[in-house]
Length: 266
Ligand code: DGL
Image 1 (cartoon, protein in one colour):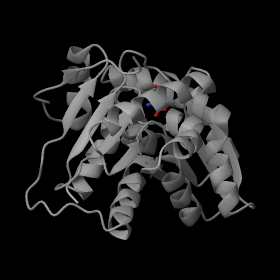
Image 2 (cartoon, helix red, strand yellow):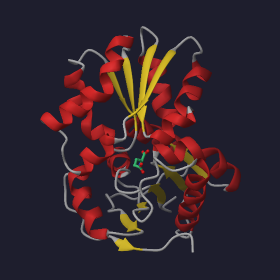
Image 3 (cartoon, helix red, strand yellow):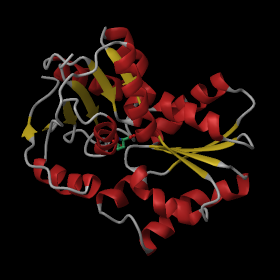
């Protein structure tokens, strides 16, 4: 089935998820929506994020998408249930795949979760992990500054190291052996975070796990594309296209040709 796959995020960060999806599924057509007019979602209330997520979904449904990926952890954490109740289409969020991976690799059953305030407050990762293994101890922390340093391109160096140490030192005392990167932006800090923990813990990248889940679901539902060649995604944003292009280059490591400005929710 050659209909596109819709993917939305609060802004540019979801490109980390798109990047993994394209690595895994190069011949699928993706339509990406970044809600740059209303970013960040991570410090907003649950009701507001649900409203935004529903509006983003309605926008993407206009493209006759066959599957929806909610790339934003804050949206997945607060809104996935409402989206699944409101829309019939297959929907994949980023939390369940990351949680499953953490459960499968922790040895000492001590897992850390980091994300935005909305994601951490929702306890969505805890619920998923506890449902799979109730004996796992979970330590969660919001790291709001990570989004900003990533968008500034400060992925390595003294500023990144200081901020990582500020937020993550507590996990060293807790003796975790696995840390889940529960935010779109955090995979870009993976190597600095790995350095902070001296390579001694497992780092779970939800973006990567989500791509595997989407790939498996397409097969299960018999809706994989039969395109024989890679296809470029279409990009839509709700504001500040220039900034999206600039930060998008940091995330994807390549220049994006075209992004279209749209209004959603009106
Ligand atoms: N995309 C958001 C997330 O993964 C991070 C940026 C924001 O706060 O909107 O939670």
